[in-house]
Length: 376
Ligand SMILES: [Zn+2]
Ligand SMILES: [Zn+2]
Image: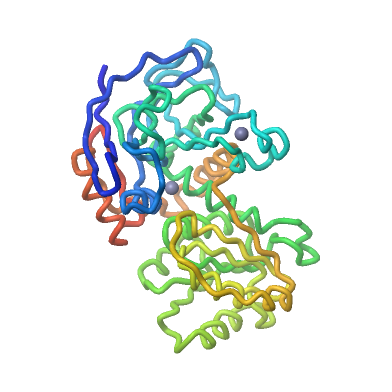
């Protein structure tokens, strides 16, 4: 059997190849891919912003149906029975289980010194199909696989990955977790999300489900802010409406209890200047979580004295532990019908039209352009 697959031969050079589908080993799962989302990091990779071993099989946000199971696979990573034909999604990050970090910091699998991520690997990696923009993906036994909740549209499975990123960023803000003493985020507290792209919107949905009292969405595009409201934002701030940074900071603070600023700020815009602004938005003693700069987007000036004066907690958030997919799928299931998740998929392409999907995503004209190897 062959699989049509998108291959990034080098940055800016997308090609199509027919690749032999390997026979699944005892712990492998062969997935018939329904769709894969084109992420900001895919665009970044295509633009030459990532130091990878090309040619690469891209695509790390995907979902599909089990085509074939290795003889030892009876359950998904949650322990739920799994069978041929079941809709699934695959956690792209895989850890080695052997390095110092795997042994000593097990709660932070992204610190693994040998972490591999499907969608970012050389075509020959372990002789497996591991890019989501392909008719088939062969997930190896070390990968976490999750069956989608009963009744869920398989397409929503492609949002498990970006939602896991957003939910993890929000949960970073929960620490140390005494919300009644306003330490860490909790029920009724305020959060501002900078950037109403897919990660920001999904973070807003997660914050709403987690009981946030106030959710401010901050962006410069009116249409995105309107969608943010439908994802659960209680207030929107269009920074284009403000005359300069000082006014913007005042405007954000004025919306919050006591006019002091939100308890938690999540930077999901990936714009360096947003970090500097976020430090000023958040109330004293509050928390800033940086999740937007997965890829290098430049630098910003930071005044260390402000961090001390404000007694701030600042956390970085890289991806998520694999079981954050369980959280993400649970959220998608709970909020399905209430939050218009499907509106994120506003540009659909077949595998043959993959280049156009990359272009739409790069131009900011799609929330999540999707590639459908089986056809649109
Ligand atoms: Zn992504
Ligand atoms: Zn490791």
